[in-house]
Image (cartoon, rainbow, N blue to C red):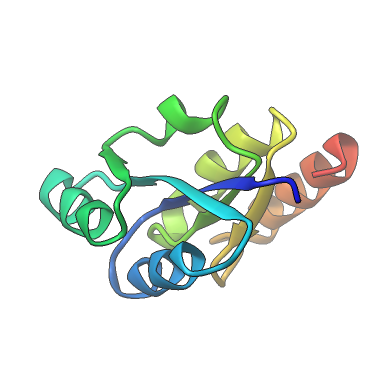
Length: 114
């Protein structure tokens, strides 16, 4: 079985649940936790025996998929950064703060088969 390398971006309330669940899924390697709050990221990363980073951009080339639970205003920038590299993306709702942002992510996803 191929191991799927996944990161979690944003580990506030919902992101913590994403990390906890992914850490227990067979066939998944939780590569890293990304959060702009270094202490919070390090805490969650330690709980799941992975590493923490404060800049999600450092993970784009390392993962097959990402789950994004950052503040809504950051969803489009973060998701687009991963989609442009063909990384599969799960974005916590709402997908974007605007319809235009959501349309951008849909178009990127379709163009990259991500």
